Length: 283
Ligand code: CAA
Image 1 (cartoon, helix red, strand yellow):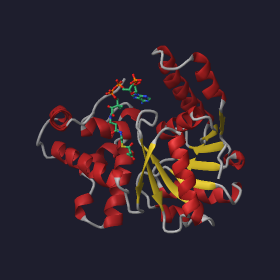
Image 2 (image 1 turned 60 degrees about the vertical axis):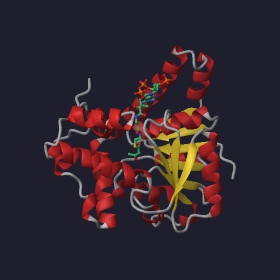
Image 3 (image 1 turned 180 degrees about the vertical axis):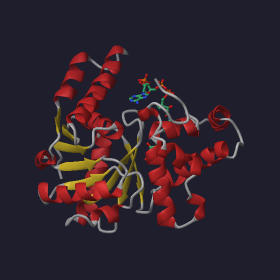
Image 4 (image 1 turned 90 degrees about the vertical axis):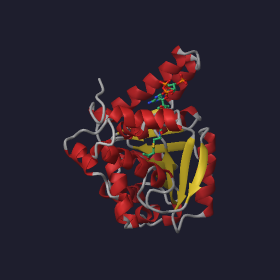
């Protein structure tokens, strides 16, 4: 299926990154969020990222303008009727995602593929909120989206071969490398990454080391680009907690229990970079 207009639900850090790479690949993009200030902030972030590329001499100024001109924004989900492929990148919250898919089922033409950028919720569970489970798929981008090369592609039990083929082709068009995962809680990426981050938080909680030392061990000892606590702040501590809860509930093994310190931080509103405070403090 040829895709020309690409819808993105959510203009937050994942949504605006996905909109940017889709527009850069030549697709017309409609980026939606529930409030005008959210779409404005998302668009401003895309403009800032592209301007940085222009300033570094990696992109011509008119190329930046062309990419931005391909992105339309909206706050009414009904505008997704114009899209022929939609990726949902709303908060990692089942109730919110289920409602969005129920609404998209009504709004989008029957042939339209509905993808989710969920980082851990099984695709089959999301697909059951539509009448087109064969056209529901996971398209899981990594943060920061413009930089990270991977897209994890997840088929639910009912996802068709054609839906997979279209999604793989779109991933490559956006100059990303797909890796396929089966439909288990957390898929591959977060089944491995989040227990590592959670264990780093346990190390802090148990006083095994200071936050800087925990991060330094993993950065310099294991050559990770960032330490796990700094990475948790980048991902968002609320998202980390949501993923750990999905792993814990979905796999039923106590090794996936979220660290109490992670829960305390989220309850205090310390969500990482996006709230200005997490394990570290941000301007
Ligand atoms: N948006 C766009 N571009 C960004 C960016 C952002 N938020 N942050 C950094 N960049 C760009 C910079 O502009 C720079 O570009 P150039 O090479 O063109 O100059 C490049 O990335 C490198 O940035 P820096 O030199 O500032 O810093 P760095 O070398 O330390 O790299 C990093 C920053 C790319 C974030 C790197 O630290 C890294 O790879 N960290 C690990 C990220 C990671 O693990 N992501 C996956 C998270 S898990 C996930 O997303 C899945 C989930 O469901 C939770």
